[in-house]
Amino acid sequence: MTYGIIVHGGAGDDYDDRLEEFQSGVAQAARAGWAVLAAGGSALDAVEAAVQVMEACPTFDAGEGSFLNQNGEIEMDAIIMDGSTLKSGSVAAIQRVQHPVHVARLVMEHTPHALIVGSGADAFARRMGIPAFVMSPAKQSEIPPSPSSQPGDTVGAVALDASGHLAVATSTGGTLGKLPGRVGDSPLVGSGAYADDLSGGASATGVGEHLMRIVISKSACDLMGQGQHPQQAAEAIMRRLEERVPGGIGGIILMDPQGRVGAAYNTHHMVHAWISSEQPLQVRG
Ligand code: ASP
Image (cartoon, rainbow, N blue to C red; front, top):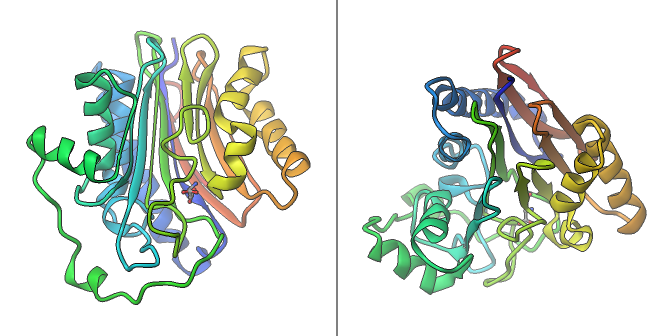
């Protein structure tokens, strides 16, 4: 059977002069996820590995590269979801970790909870032995931005492993200049991500306040569950976003239980990459 991974580096309009940087970041992430799958690893391990590569890359609005909020601080949101059990783990407004996606996984695997926020999430990370991460001096000296409803360069990954299990992860620093405490779609089950072995996996990006109104990731998975090809489902869900949320901005990557992929967005770019047992690395967006 086919197995593989698809990743994205966020739906945005301001990439033009840095397109190669974004493309190389998503290619590296897809390769890291693929290495896990090719060695017989799980879809969960693959999406976590891929997202961690992008969280460590300052190009993206996640982990180290997270946009600052109005106080000049970073507050990150992340989710990971297992399509075989429908279990998920999320963190929101977490501040002092390098890899929010890893803390999300610990929430899923070591607590009875699905979402831990703010100082509670940071305290949980410390309890799990994760060292406090401090912003680089360059990041600390950035001027706090004014509020913007433009999406960032959120990252995400969907993978199908050789055992036929799907998993998804999404990680973000949120929108530029957001209010402290603001949480977007990314850590919300069904909005920023969804995975179900029976229908498919989805990771979304865009303006969270728009995407959550149509529960975009779960809605796209339902379309695949009804038999739509992931590309058809991705395009249909973007049409729904535009019809139901006037001015709605976003993008989505999808993979179905057969390992077929789809991607659609209504921004200038949504850099994405995929690799499967059938196809070598492809980079688009
Ligand atoms: N969806 C993210 C949020 O609203 C931003 C993004 O995708 O870039 O927090």
